[in-house]
Length: 293
Length: 345
Image 1: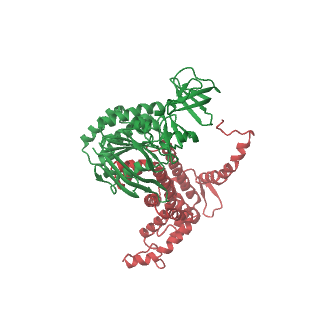
Image 2: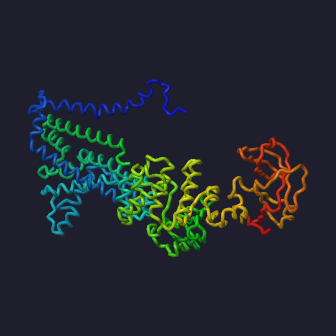
């Protein structure tokens, strides 16, 4: 039997992929090329004309101390979000993998947060932690903590990290659970007979066998923290206070839309684009090598 | 070294399915005990109960005179070889063998000594640095065996360890498992659905069916004197001919409902031969002949439409459709009552 799909009509395959190609062209390649072109232009103060300035926008960008501050903020944010969401999801998945009563309901509930829109998630957390309205903020004040994410940059950072991490836990949970269920039961049983207690079993058998999943999620979560958290940050802090929660993506928006510096903003997007391409390349390289065994 | 005592053991799963329905079994120290039966007969569940991978619903299990009902698998001093080998895929062969010893805080040089000794016994010394995926099925099987040996447990448990190997390798591994178990003199419980494996390996053969033991005994005793029609049909290939007794036969054979005779005990005779004293004679119509080389299997049916198989060494196989007279001696006939139980002679 022939394994490959065989088309009798010569152009049918092209027609079938045409919609996907069109969407990618219109919504990705076109804006991306626009951004690249725009990054070489400088607009006048009124936005009436623009002139070609070569790499001027990039030079300005990389000589701006505040840009490096933003990079640092992004790194802190991304690391914290990735670590928290991955470890929380792994913990939940390990618990859900045990033979529990009502495990299915528990699993379903854990997946729900993924369906919540980023801005809504942001507002939810904002309400809970709002210095004057929030339930949690009240509790914190009772404990003697002067909680105020509106004024304190560290508090604001903690808040957006929590919200962003919470939102990603469901996704990570699903992959970790699938990864755990793919490990043959007999390997775990063999380890139990071999005298490994549950904790040791986890770190010497389960965790190494999960490493392909963990690596995949690591890359996905970094990309998420870098780019997909715009909605949460915008809804919660707007990058503030005093740019304490301004990540690279938010800065593109702030400088371009709010600051009106389209050229500089476009240069920033190009830098971001290169980062994404880099991350994707790393991921594909390693996924093909299957990481461990 | 230790024997295993199983008494009144039952296992009921959460869904109410009773996989093991009350088993009493005494495996003496150093014996090779084989649990054999069709799939779903509870043999694997029984083995997992001994290993501690399943919790008992009722009954007691003792290993070396020590009650282990509530002990963790690790505390039972057993080693298990799994059907899919269950090797740790991310570890080298050496680490696979050493893992159990490391967990028990064995000194490093002792671990090294034992791993190398086991590797030498199993002829896997050259593969110690490889990962399981770089090994063939037979080599993986050896590593799984090695992992059981290095620990020097009181009991080996085997869960269909050879069923993933090809036929040729299965035979040679079978011989090797027997040789190893003999030289280590470690008690072994071995689960299989292959009656040939069971016959050749066992000191003590346990035939199981539907969560119960049908018969316990030395392999040849079980073969020669099956206590039930189930055992008669299960042990031996091709299976024993089991025929519903005609009224006249029932009368002659003490009210037997079923009469059994092994294919090798049916002899060709001259046409019209009278049945031997206390024996039986048949008129067989040949339907098919399988030529296996050293012997042939002749299939057919008698005058009452009962299917029969005859094992026969010789070159002059009868043509299909031929009528052949068969006789069976009295001593080779097995009699069973309506419930399938063996009748005394």
